[in-house]
Length: 95
Picture (cartoon, helix red, strand yellow):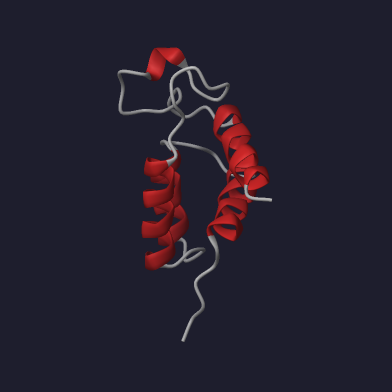
C-alpha cells in the first residue's frame, strides 16, 4: 500500500517543482503535469485540486490579483511568482 503524503508535503512538492519548471498553465494544470510525470499519485492530485479550490485566494488578500476576481484564473496565467508566494504562505500557515 502506498502512503498518501500530507497536504503540506504535497504543497512542498508542487512549490519545489514549480520553481524549476516552466509554467504553461495555471496551478491546477501544473498539478496535472506532476501527476502525468508520476511525481504525485492520482489520489494526491485530487487532494491538491480540492485544497487549491477550497483555499483559493480571496479578494483583498496579499496573494490575490484583483484583475483575476472575475476569472477562472486565480493569478495571471503562466506567472510563477504569486503562485510560489501563495504556496509558501500555505506551507508556513500549517506550522
